[in-house]
Length: 246
Image (cartoon, rainbow, N blue to C red; front, side):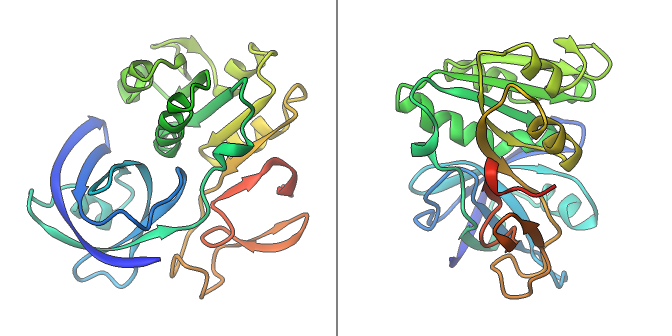
C-alpha cells in the first residue's frame, strides 16, 4: 500500500452516471489488474474505493459510477485537482492462472472496469480473449469499442434488448460452452449465477463490498469462504473459483 498524491488529468462521461477519470501520479504500487485505490475526499470521513481500470508508469484510469454525494463530487472536480490516494490495495487477478487458450471475461455494469486492464495484460501475452459485457440498456453501455480495439471478441447483452442480445451475461456464457474458464466482476447476484453455470470449471471472481478502511484493519468487509473468513479488501477483492462459499 502506498499513500500518494494524484492530479486529475481529465474526466469524461461514458454513460448515465458512469465516468472515466485519468489521474497522474506514482502508480508503482499497482501490480495486477483487479486491484483498487482508496480516494480521500474533502469533508468526507471515509475514503471511496474504486477499481483500477488500467494504468501506466505515471497515470491511472478509473471508471467511476455515481453512487452518492461523494462520487458525485469526485467526478466533477476540475482538471488539476490534487487527490490523496491509497494505491496498490487488494489482490488482483492472477494472469498466470488463466489458461493460454484463454477464457471469457464476464462483466456487468461498472464491474467491467477491472476486466479491461486484465484484457490488456492477456492480449499482450498473446492470449485470445472473449469479453461478455452486460448492461441494463444500450444507452448505459460503455467500453465496448475499447475492448474490441484490443482485439477481443466482444459479446454484449442488454436486459431490454436495445443492444446486442436480449438477456443477461449468464445467457452469453451459456451460449459459449467451449469457454470453461471465466474471470468475472459485477453485482453479487450476477456472480452467483455465473458461478452456478454447469459448464464452467474454474475461474476468478472479483467481489464488491462496503469497506471502512480498505486495507484489512477494520474487518468490515469480511466474508465466509471454504477456507474460513477472509476480507474482500485484503485477501480479495479477487477470489479463486474454489474459494467462494455463497
